[in-house]
Length: 349
Image (cartoon, rainbow, N blue to C red; front, side, top):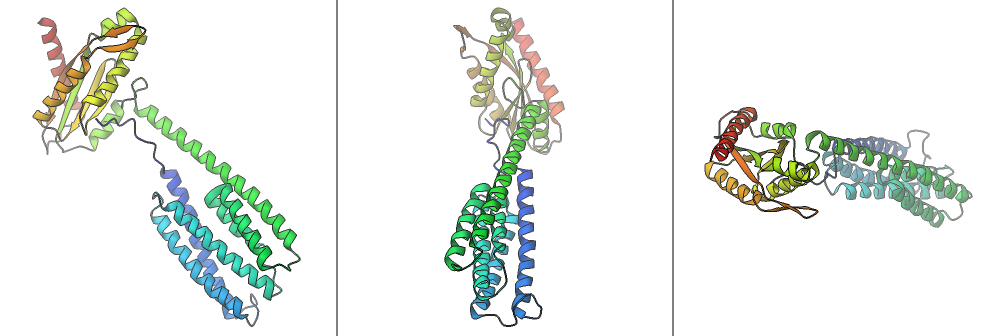
């Protein structure tokens, strides 16, 4: 049986999808600007670059164009598919390409020209922090610092590079991690509140509002509706107390999940009344489901503290044929009336 109220928590919700798309849009915009600036830098038409580039710098610029273009392709894929499991891989590859681009540019420019470009290393650390929190910032700091020390061994700014990069990693990484934790907490709270608003607190089954929403998506299709009322529930409450009655309702909910069959959905209307929806079911499938439910419910229930009870169930049925537009309210009223007729017949017997 399908119980709407107990799905696995979604790994990616709307807020996270929106954040990921924003990150990718920022990456696309910044790299597109980088592509333009690199092309201008290579052209030598402005004072942004030396009049003559060294062979190594020309190679680095061509490499940068290729790497930024490749990273933008990954950003487009990630922006179009922010919920895919491959998102984290695409994101990590972008960090790698951006970091290689910046390291190569800084290493050659610091070696061949008088320009001070090492602060760009902080950009790669910040990018990694935004995408992969503190761990990403730390790993990128290690990579950029090691590359700078190895590729620019004679730089007088090495101490400044390492110190500034370390502070950037700590500040950006910790802030990004804190934001990610806050977002996760908000997501969990939001899901919990949504679950509370649409599910019965005692049994965990969907409430009427959730069942109405689900049934609305089935409009026009064949549908079987069962209304259930326990026989003997009042006696359990009167004899053993409401706590025992609550344990019995919880046990019934579990049994309904076992007995309803594939594709069916159970909810609690209130008290000891339950509603079951069987999408696409005809009379035969509904009758078979009713028999399974009766057999399951009448099994003795161990409520703890030595209390073992046996209850029955009265079931009312309403059927909607494919193409019929009858809504859940009307079908529930029909099934409810049938359930009370069965209950009255049982009492009269």
